[in-house]
Amino acid sequence: MKLNKQDILKALESISAPGEGQNMVESGAVTNVVTFADEVIVDITIANPSLQAKKKTEVEIMKTIHDKVYEKAKIKVNIKVEVSTKSAPNVIKGKLIPGIKNIIAVASGKGGVGKSTVTANLAVTLAKMGFKVGILDADIYGPSMPIMFDVELERPLAVNIDGKSKMRPVENYGVKILSIGFFTKPDQAVVWRGPMAAKALNQMIFDAAWGELDFMLLDLPPGTGDIHLSIMQSLPITGAVVVSTPQNVALADAKKGVAMFQQESINVPVLGIIENMAYFTPDELPDNKYYIFGKEGAKNLAQDLDVRFLGELPLVQSIREAGDVGRPAALQTATSLEQAFEKLTQNVVEEVVRRNDNLPPTEAIKITTMAGCSAVKK
Image (cartoon, rainbow, N blue to C red):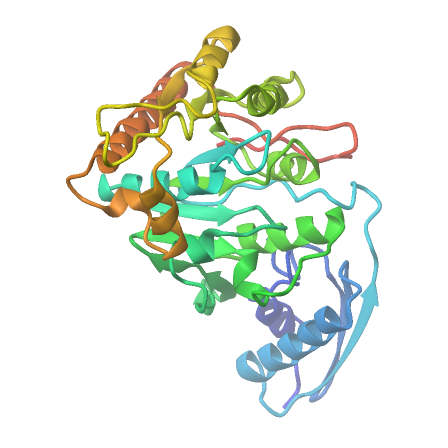
């Protein structure tokens, strides 16, 4: 059989290099294709220098040509590694995720304030309300969603979407989840520099089959660092929610978190502030409230910053226990906790609706370290 260059190129349009949104032909990764009777030579350039990435790319090309063009073709793949210098290495490419209506960043200036717990319970409450929900666990160095949703042993499966191989998010309680925790061992520390972390996030965002979602919640790492910028350069964030506890040390960092989103170069609408661990009520004294970390600190901060106070959550042992066993507390029915999370979630939804009615779609941010990354609209 005599092979045809156009047939080869058409076949290669069905695959993409790891972490790339476009297929190999559209992205320019395929630099040349030469055919001689039943032989074909494919020249390809990739940005990932790892041996695993090169081997995977070679295998996918050979398998695709054998499956789609000619099963007995003699194939040679020449792979050249070329790291782009056009943009900062820790930047995720700015693109839309088709089918996702609202992307909500859940952030905290300080670790340990219960940001991931709030994210998990917001997600299951939204799902109970009938919304289609997903969580991207962007806390690369401390992923907790696999534990909180009792899916530690699950792994995303590969699915074929329009001829492209994608990751299918793990799902539980009506929420789709992707986390770096699915790809590492429980006792394995993630010791990565910014570019590697951004690459992992890039794959979980753009190489995943999220499907139709009303809300994607981003569980961001604590602080205001590299991962936050990478995410916001990548995606048009609809709005941000900041979680804090009432004490001054947490409020000082929460204030910085709000300021980050409100910077002119970032300009992500802040939907409001949530106060976690607001007070403690012991079972034996149900009418008493003990303000262990201070009283109404986050509420006062919201007023000072002129953003909405979305609500408070008590310091309750069952919330911690529910997260540890992988069944978020908001799933409990006919409880005060369920009511608290429902009210909180309703306030978040109200703010999203108000934001979408009164403000234009958010664009992916443009930072001076990014060269030529175009704005992306919701």
